[in-house]
Length: 342
Image (cartoon, rainbow, N blue to C red; front, side, top):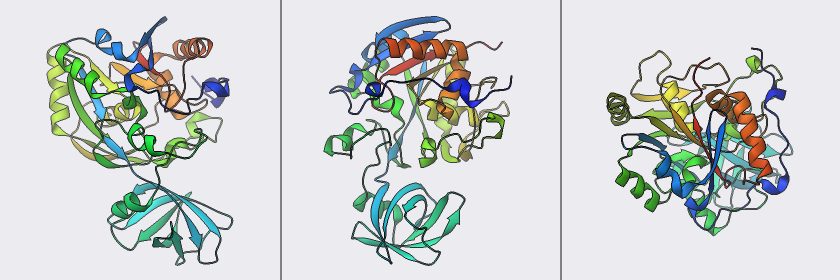
């Protein structure tokens, strides 16, 4: 099957893009999609959809204060969005300026710190901080809300644009499926007998980069770093042995699990993934997926279409729009059952 960008387009009313989170995390709506069957539910009722012995896999990455404003030596304004930490002092970043800065030049950011422009790396810039980049970014940077949220980050976002279990600093966007969980709901899942484990995938700014080719076979994904712990691999093996299901919380968790199992054996350790999941992909690990609603023509919409079925996802999105679900990062959620291989 030859896929094009138009296969993953849909029209979304602007007022369905959630601009703020709900007062309570688990109060979001939940659309359950199993094949052609759709059920409207609420996220707080997730325990009724899972079974004792299932395994919930969470991405514990924490969002950095990755947005910084500043000036070039010439006085021109710049905006920086950190893509990833390369080492102690060096980062890869998106940079917006009227004229691109030259290698060797310096930028003054947030009237507080200077960074050196080392050069270009494709569409990104390599920048060197004068000290610990992660610490300096956390101290002086701003929380980077997604571009479709039409406001600057405020104090409530400091809490609500992080999952309650976030611990490993490194993302520039939240693994948003996890935003629906509060500690009470996690406790109820454990009481039911649902096991919980973690992976880490640091979401890069490239997650918001549009697909620029009509022929999807020509698209190249951005690369993101991940860690698959031994404890998670052991938990998955134990779940399989007892007949439980693997439930990935978010496309990030799914990409870790499926990237680490591409050769058929689930591997432990750190790695880099540029996995691009489109319909026809052979899933090896994940049975159910909890995910938000994704942008038209996005790689994430392609991934969920591969997982749940193109026709099924198209119908589910049409239903969500007609019944006014809230979309994107601060929006509502879906629980998808994996479509059996055709």
